[in-house]
Length: 222
Image (cartoon, rainbow, N blue to C red; front, side, top):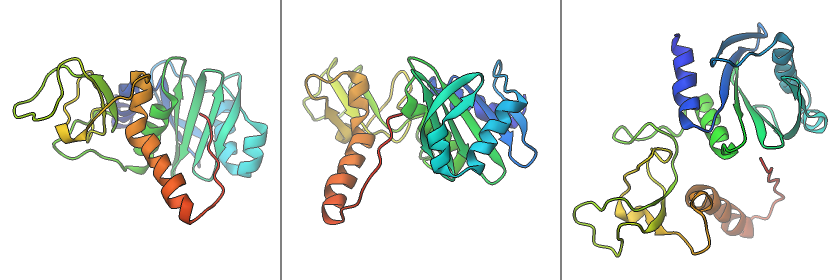
């Protein structure tokens, strides 16, 4: 197995929220590597490459026909293309030489699929050297164990959300006590996991930044 295949499998499929992944050479319009069982036909390659060649507005209007399915386009710009069909979807990001393709299926979190794909393309959001290399940077769990010296009110079984430096998708994650926040009553664990990064970032941009510098925003539902 090549280094590229390892990168695709370990980084994307390892999140458990990417069903399949592939790398396409833009200039040659050819498939470079793909995860096992992900069979992309030449017509699918052309569809994805042409999706970036068109005007983004046209791509959003026309949607995407990929692997014999019609997808509704929820984002299309110079570097990213997101499309969905009911509870499944495809995420495509563009580099100078390649298209990185990832799909998700029912039961997977589209936001995790997007983050993993975009992060792999940009090379950003790398965890600190001492942190886990498992995605992601947010988590919600029931307390399994308390470390020595904990001074707060936490006890085993308490529900908490946090913004760890990495490893949010692992079965267990270790988080400094100061980064823990009680989960508000009525929220499920998946809902609470969206608060530390996605919701608070959105709140900051739309309320605190937007209040002083109003501007129109487009929020795709992917």
